[in-house]
Length: 534
Image 1 (cartoon, rainbow, N blue to C red):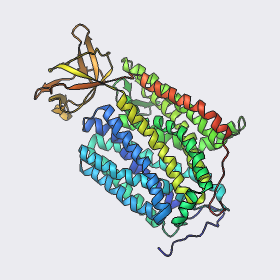
Image 2 (cartoon, rainbow, N blue to C red; image 1 turned 180 degrees about the vertical axis):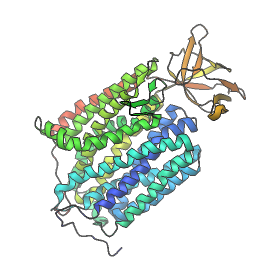
Image 3 (spheres, rainbow, N blue to C red; image 1 turned 90 degrees about the vertical axis):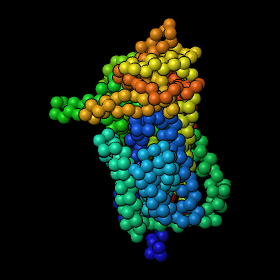
Image 4 (spheres, one colour; image 1 turned 120 degrees about the vertical axis):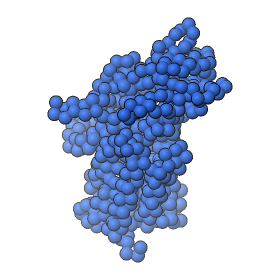
């Protein structure tokens, strides 16, 4: 490692190490988003988890991914530096994908996601800060540009993986769908290793780190940023649901997923493929924002970083209002075009561009030089908090009621003690009912799968409090009984029914944005760039 460059960049142009970081990021993000694109469908359709349980698992995983950055930051800034931290944790990251590909059970899911959360999370603040470290006083004007390129690479990788991995899951199964992201993560690690002699390596700071972080200036910088991150955490609570609750919405048979592009191209999207709208719109909106939207807005109001974030918060609330409108229609059996979801994704992505890219650049420039990775880790902790909020709300959202009886057959009738459900609302069965669903699979072969997961309430007999169990297209579920229903078995309904769930989050985001107005206007910070004194 003695031949590593440690001097600050003196070039006027783009540093030589940047292409390796961007290439690594594109492959790594293909890996991560490819895995995450199919996670919700894998948990509900292959492990027969309820949507609530899958939401808790998914957002707890997201929370872990964005909690471990602070640990990776400490490792990099104090002990072994950013390069070694990224390389070592990337190898752990590869093993996480391997576990998911080889073990298609809840145990495999737990250990695979645990390894990925440590690897993916641990490298996150280091990669972002490592990009910034490549710049010095002569080319610091290119930092904003490179963070946009960096984000472009993230979504370039995400675009292809979000299309491909759902197809692999549908046609070849979980082993191939999880295996491909693992291969891409290995490639990402190799690309990063190739750039080792091109990078500017900022060495770890050791004991000097503590003097900075606990010094007056370090504590002041963290205090200013923590206050801002508390608001941004709410944005992440909404944004990250595009890979969970928005996917469950897209599973509805009443969301028409057929695409017809002027009669030239016709195809039908899988529910998890609709997420491709996010990286696609990012690739469009990054240059559009830089060259059209931001210059236009800057003529109306000085477009400081926190003003961009503020506008993004209001747009995020608007996206969830659109999601609520979609949910209201499909929950009452009205067929709705997938283009409505694309509209919601467009507004949400515009919010992401304004909040996420801006916050990345803002966090780097507002962090003292010896705390770059740490501040990036703290910023990502705000994403962790947002995801924990979703997991907690998802758990609170469940109302558990005891089942009085289940009558099996071509139509399955459920009777619930002390509760009369609403037609079209969701009912969730955990494992262990002793019942099995009969469904036609490939070549009309009847598959027998456990009754577990999320279904819909069908026709209700108010007198007997009995109702039919139906799928997401309101077609009757046919079941058989293999053993007796466990005594005291309970199912879950939702406190926030139908569109109310999405409206609740839209209101939360709107109130947060209103409160953030004063912060955005009054904030005064300090900019720190490598090569300049703190």
